[in-house]
Length: 437
Image 1: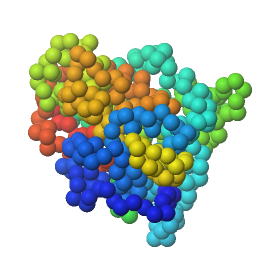
Image 2: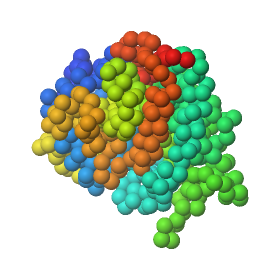
Image 3: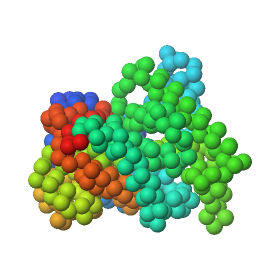
């Protein structure tokens, strides 16, 4: 990542603070990062973090204003210093990494020079959205609902007679992964490999330190992903299929030139993470909220029409993507705090979603008046392209679980569950449950 400040401010994050523990991936802080966010909001609208090399913005109004101004606040480095691209830069500066890993890092850096969607700025961002948005329209999502329901039922069929399940590994993870793999035309026999590729990309997000061996394994998996889909794109050029790869190759709007191979590969990575990992965490996190409150569980089970409201509150309270980065393209200010040109900014969506200045009783679920103006999918120019997809998959998933698993309850103490080791992506690593077989 670029060095952005000639004279960096003093670190506003104390080493023993709740937010510092969250950045260090302390398991207790990962289980409950909300004290860390509350302390940030109380401390001030903008706090400098030397660990992130970024200003941290934690209040709802300030985050909203930054998201509304994509010109002043660029998305070019949306994952900041905790990304596969940032790891690739470290590898290229370290001769201790094997030659094949350095080769994959070099390819990642080359691809990153073709920004798309999540990390593209206007007007390039609008061009990309125009080219691919037809794949995510409400009508297209509605047409895919039979696929969502079929995959959901097949997964539940596999454990419904056992009386126990681990909802992350058995359900919340394979559901969106199977859906996005199907959309991309990946055959069922490659599902385990597809899962490994997905894990590699997400492992690089929200973890500032990874062991040498884990980085090597990660980049070899990333290389396999790029190799596979490069070959598949060539196959689709000669033999089009009914999948998103063919759609991307043929995408045209008003005579615009087609997407380049590098742009398509970058989009596939974003679809992989956005259409998979975040939906997994949304389903698991929402179920966990229900399992914590048997009264609410019974209410939603008795009235499935409450599930969409539950999903919105799950998004607000558990934000599968806890935050994103921006880069100041000019000297500016946020909440009255000066921000120099080139500075990185970490927008903590999950903190804004619990800001009492915006939401009454912000830490409570409200199924009667849900707060859909949350920040879980971003706002403005970069609002999540796959938001409708995630919502519909999750609604079908939760309704099916509640209908088919009578007496469902957590089989472990839910407050002791481990969360994934990342401060950006949030979700329980496992969720064991029991129910009447």
